[in-house]
Length: 130
Image (tube, rainbow, N blue to C red; front, side, top):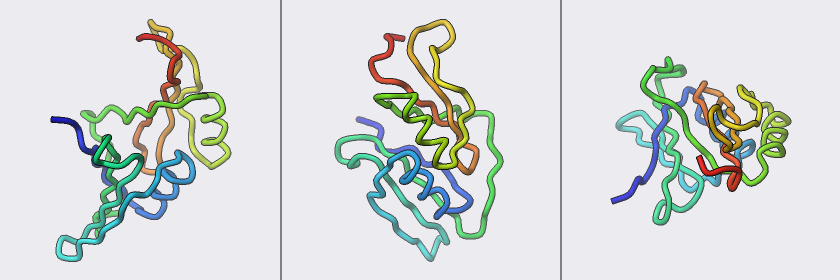
């Protein structure tokens, strides 16, 4: 068994696709409308056959979701966290925690929010063992 995808609900699919592709570098793997259910699915990053992906779900009649207390964040590995944060900032993204070592550890992390308010942790690959 393995994780296939993480689904998040978004209020504006075009805005979210633009953020995940243009700001975070996701590849849009597929997009499919389900008129009977009044929703659209879009997925991206690497091929689902070999890795887990993020699935954006847009319910046609809903433009906003309240953040619950159970969901934590999505984590994305990056090579150069400072350059990544600058690129995100330049693309209009909101950095909510500047790059630096995690509390009680040495791994370098940062946090950003997507347009719907979901927290995304950036983890600099090879920066620590915690």
